[in-house]
Length: 526
Image: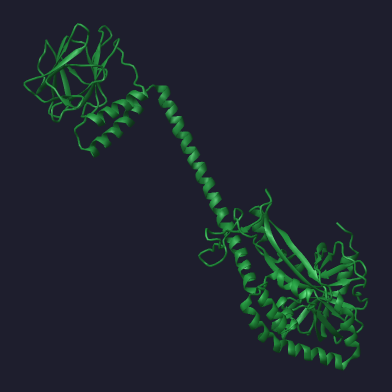
């Protein structure tokens, strides 16, 4: 009787199968041949499929081996007519088979594994058994390594999906589905994070650009000589203008002298802080101790940075009013980040602006004055600041009750161009001393100017050109840094707060009327 090497081709209900051959390669791979006859002849068909015949029907094509059962139910195998036979990778002509022996039939025959079973029902293979069979095939096969590797992988996958228990296969499907879901979720999270990072990088790059601009504006030792020559001519012109004012009107001289001590130079810096843990945005320092930069040359910023806090430095002007030591300036000076178009996006990234330092220097006072915002106007570019702990003997400027009209003469005071103009006014000797000290930082220069008595506002005279609701236009000369300075009438009273420059209109400036300042002062505290 011929028996095909496939599962279910032999009825084992009434026969106790004590052994089996599981075919691992060839056309019969994945099938099992059950062994129960006393003697069996194994042959190979032309297509490489293995077939069996018992003693009663020996008609196998190309017989290769004979199996014979012993009293212990073990089978011994013997090669027929010297046909090639390998047991566990070793050539053999006859051998008693042991559980898990690997048999290779002929030069091109399949590899099969020999099993012993206690009954006629083959149990499902365990995962360990499947991997063990794969390892045994890879170890004992005489095929090239690449072929062995490919067949080992395909055999493992096939047996895991077919020969294991239903429960295991169901668990595998659930695991694969869960893994796929996790991969999909991770992909979505990565995409969201990528978009957030791209947005955050754009905003950080903007702040880095602002920081780089601040560095370019900072005073360096090399700048001092250039500043001296660049501004001497400007200061000469300004001094001549002030002298002309003084010559033309004794009242103007008195106004400037009386207002001088109330006009302050404002200096500040702000950065960004993580709202969740309070960490500040910092520069990233490299192994050599130098700040790292992006490919475009901008400083690299990060919450994990270990360098100095990334701060945006700014200057402005302001002035004392009344007797409560309150300082008036522009809103864009008191809250400098409000003009930052990217502040909302940075806020969505968990960053909030925070003032790092906010100081003022008054003429004739060597110590810095701490500033804090009291109120800012919602409709006008003005802010009200307080000076905690400050005691002044003189009152500040008076807000005019009279509205300015076109044609009125005005005097604008402040600190245009910030530190650079103050350095030029301080003179060549002061600049040389700074160079010797090597203290040319943003904060150091201002402190030395104050200690040396070189904090002095500039004054320029002009005419009111136009008055409209909430705005006064005039032609007094100034530039960036003069924002927040007082605009005085011929009585020395404040008629406006300098706010913006309009260079396209021949140097005209805009100011916020004193009436808006009065509204802010009288507004209830939040």
